[in-house]
Image 1: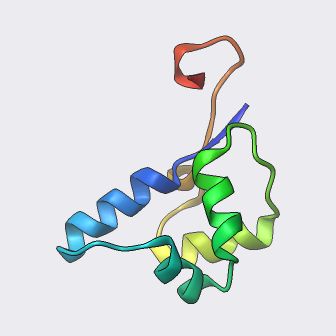
Image 2: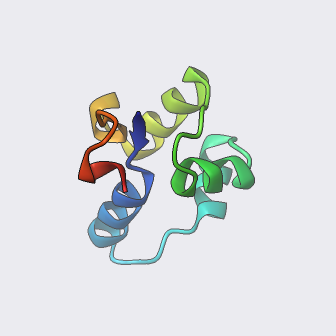
Length: 79
């Protein structure tokens, strides 16, 4: 299963910037609809396009492996 680490990236950016960063702000900065961002952050197994991954990597100035993680089925990481 593919796991998105959007919440972790948000928390790291909030810590670095010293302020709260909302999904609405990420939406404005990436052009990704807020509802899509919410699904990426909260729905296990959500499927999104590579264009969204590209935009999120640009927004967070990160590599793809910082945003996406492969979790084998049946592991504790899945929960």
